[in-house]
Length: 190
Image (cartoon, rainbow, N blue to C red):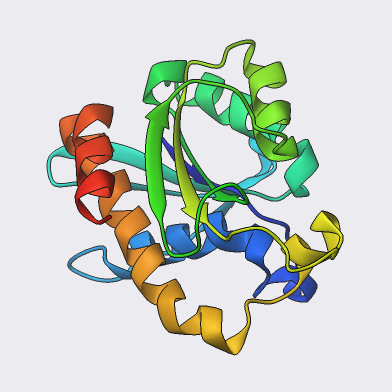
């Protein structure tokens, strides 16, 4: 199961906090023979697409809650589709990672990310995979909340498609070959 984190609604669609949503959109656009689409899954308050990466079945999902309340939808999706925690992959924006970089890891702390904190609490474990899309720290003394909720700048939009594509490729590698393969792919991209 691959879950992209973000905030619902047009107001946040292009914001830095919606990097996870952007990666899910990229994965949907790359599905063959035709692009995939998300459908409402009311039992989990999520939008989902059941598909395959090669021979491997996968659920792509976007919680319909705000970032800080992502835990319940993610835990409910994992329970509904009977996906163990170690096969859940969460894609999110990361302040402590340089812009344009992508990092894959299994488990670990939330590093102050409220979406990850919510998921860890709801799932009762830290043992799920994470794909971080680096957005860097806010400039000067800008408030972190303001920074993540603002749209990507023109300069950021130059590298954003590459980072989103790299994160999507890392997610496919994790699903088809395991998290270690996703880590190797992300490291190879620098």
